[in-house]
Image (cartoon, rainbow, N blue to C red; front, top):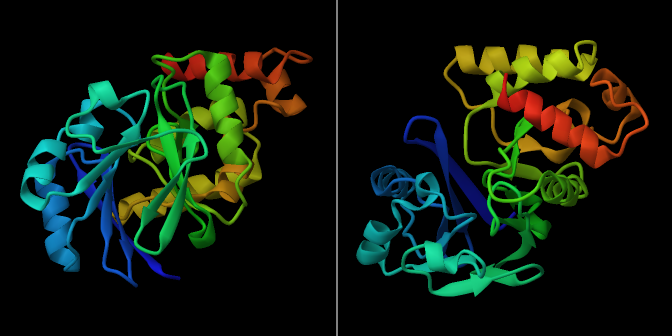
Length: 255
């Protein structure tokens, strides 16, 4: 693979990720929650920041941009719909656009729901996706600016990626997400196995990410809203998948 990744902690529960093209040395920070942890990660890896790929406008994903831009003169790429709410944007993108990082090529997916202008970056040849706060391990983001139907459609886009696609998201929420998911599918053996794996990782101080699309399809009730068993579990047998998803999301909000 021509790509290397380095994941690190930011703020209280955010993840930062660096994506590095080994052929050219170009390095992107996926979002920039805070400048200092990004700089520490660059020092640790020996890489030089050339780009920031922004998933959405929330401050816990963008607060570090001005300081990093000033220091590195890096290119800042963001959603066309979000550009007015993000500092120092150089390039705007939308659905189907290609973002190049040296010899790496990332495809933009528009995934509204958490925010109206949320986007994800999919590096198909590297089997990598950077999904911000749309999809979490065994969870998904709150629907803040979009509609439940939009969020369900966005999750289906991500679910359609190959099973062996590894994805990085914005937060370490997996244990809490599993506790909720087990209220929906208590007898799901894959979910039970994931719970044991995650408990061991966290007990050792290790992150639970990245996850894979295939693992999420087996364990993430938000991606499974079109299964009859999940609809029945929330008392909505025979109803649309979007309605089932909305009910699961509302239950998670109150969990």
